[in-house]
Length: 548
Image (cartoon, rainbow, N blue to C red; front, side, top):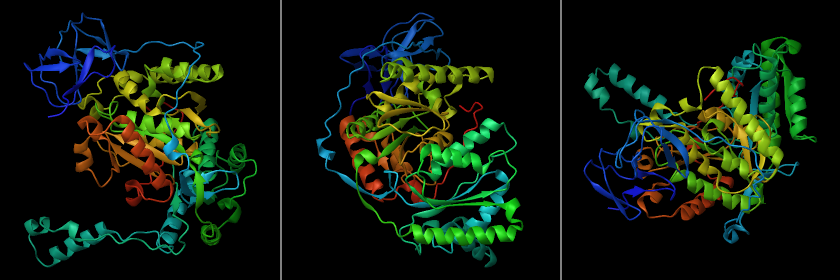
């Protein structure tokens, strides 16, 4: 039958149901029998003590809510009987000490990557085509159509074949019922055969920015694009500019130099207003891109140590198991990599609400602690000014599956960052320059945050999900980890690893975290994850308005 409940921390006054529980049942929590007064669905929480209206609700050892009414031991927590609350925090001298996990097993481990002249090592080798402004999106799409299939990067489209099959049935006079019985799974998807074997793909990063907004948005966009161009997973880039937009090529070049003073990758900058005819622009862009890719394909994978890896940490479609299975397992993997000299990025600042004191105390430098406080404060203020707030962060899916306040969601989300010291605090879209745990200010939005982490240097992203989300990235493999076995089995076409084993008691957090790092090493050497196989190339720059 397995364990039925979990009390996360000794100080907690709530427990998590690991299975569906019925009112009237007596369940044992830490040796004490609790009679349930309500039905409690798996992933949801119930009280271990009586509470008065206004009393504090503690989970993960921190304040996560206040009671809206008098409550009894055994009551289920809902959005009606509790509301979001979080403790304040202050910058203080904490003298944080950390005991790194045992990393002997991976000390001599190597991955096969692409070595760049700036000392970084990529886990892939992509060519980018980027517009400086949305006006060039159409030209980028023309290049996509011209180059993707010609270079062998367009997989055979079984969905197109399926539609053709249905059309043939209709033309043959088949009934609607017969059409609905058509077997899609009988169609095999063919693997593309690229003519440049050492180039993993050509990626087209269209966006809606570059002009029409405030100048700061244009500068920020240039910083993000520079992060992608200088990224170790990128061999070179073609950039299309209209010429008159706010996001000028000169700003892009300044941002590139900030990230790599000796930048020497092939970079082709084409200005439509200078060149003139659209046909001349596209012919030149296609010719230069193809020639650049031919040269870039001469690069080959070579062994590299694990300290060259930078992991982005992300969660989306989270559920009530995220903070007790997948997120802490990712956190242990993060600690292992930090212990090996690598870097990790913990982002999604709206989902750090309530755990700020812990993260502030872990900052190695007081300046970073102060910067973290300032960024969190400014973000919270902007959310409030926009008529929202961090308390409105949980999505309907989060709430349905047990994450009923932002503080509950945040306390579990922060587990992805492990327990190591905070090496640096970064504001979007600054790059990672220090090994260790980096805090990066981003929204909680899955795609905006993943886009930002990769722009700051993440070579691989670990993405936990309890409800299922297909999010990917054009240049960095996004590894999907299910928080529960039911999801892993249901959506196996988009999810790579199952962390439901922790809930079932067949694997410890440490064992699961070690398994994640082993998988990361395979991905770093070229193993394709589901998001890459499915061509899930999500790219959404964050405008510094409020996006929760």
